Amino acid sequence: MPYDIDSVRAQFPILAEKVYGKSLVYLDNAATSQKPQCVIDAYDHVYRRVNANIHRGVHHLSNVCTTLYEDARQTVASFIGAADSSEVVFTRNTTESINLVAYAFGDKFVAPGDEVVVTVLEHHSNIVPWQLLCQRRGATLRVVDINDDGSLRLNQLADILSPKTRLVCAAHVSNVMGSVNDVHQIVSMAHSVGAAVLIDAAQSVPHFAVSVQDLNCDFLVFSGHKVYAPLGSGVLYARREWLDQMNPWMGGGEMIDKVSFAGTTFAPPPLKFEAGTPDYAAAIALAEAIRFVQSIGLDNIDLQDQKIAQQTIEGLEAIGGVRIFAKTARHAGAVSFLIDGVHPYDAGSILDKMGIAVRTGHHCAQPLMDRFGVTGTVRASFGVYTSEADIDALLNGVERVKKMFA
Ligand code: PLP
Image (cartoon, rainbow, N blue to C red; front, side):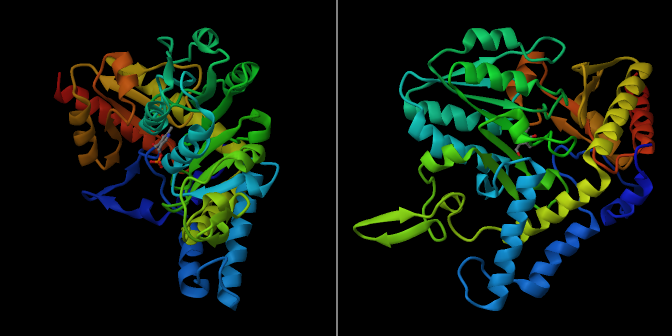
């Protein structure tokens, strides 16, 4: 065991909760993660001890809070290997980060006749903002398919890419399959035709180390709430050269230099993209969540995650009559499956009564469901506290569901 799961579990108060009188087996981490005590304490500390609006005050509390918020930005920057903390914009979540890029980058750099490329396995939040952008700008959305094993058809991407391609948007890890895309390759292919690349890292950042400089991407987005931080703590990484050229997407306080009716000038990035009072308590607690995962070690988390995924897949295969979507070379954080003859909603509801929380349905990835010809799957997704006993409980539950429908 790469680290002591029991001592990690002990740090998450919610894991002591009973569901229908049974121990909670929480396997819905791809939707949102649970919060360790240190993160709850960091959030609590803001409201109990230091709360005051940031960046505006000359008074003590405002200065303390501003320092904590800007320190959090620095913590995020080092966590994702950004060259400078000004390349980190705080948002509410992955969805807001992607929409920010669609408006602030897309409306400026995507012209009629241009193309934006996505993949068929994206979460809706990495599809719909690009559809809306293409409608606004008279551009075309192109889609890269997958092979039946869940891997991306990179040869098809090569065919699609052209001087018309402005932007390629791809998930690092599929939220449905847990498959890991070769984003290094995607970045170098896109850059070779002069296109920028956005990586949706919502499902990679919680499971293994990610470095924006190593990936050489233009944009990278993730949600704090999936990496043990509070809701409301989203991140957009963008190369400084883009942030300097992009227009603001929302106007208001905090993001200006000088306002007059003759015209307004803007603050330098990242504040140019943070209009209004940000959720500084969530951002400050995100920094604590990052220190928490770093204290376990991303490499250790990755090893344990792979072990858990393997246990899940081998166990489901041993049960038989279970289809896995899809058997990719590697599963990071999630395994999706269907039990033959059982609707995913029924399977999820029965597992729930056993205290096992899994997600059922399309997982906000309807195009991927269409690609597989199904309406939904059952998804088990993992966190740092997922134990072998959790997976044993899941497998035992699947066997019982199967017997009920036999
Ligand atoms: N992208 C991926 C890959 C996701 O898994 C999710 C959420 O599940 C999102 C984007 C959207 O995240 P949020 O709802 O936090 O904005």
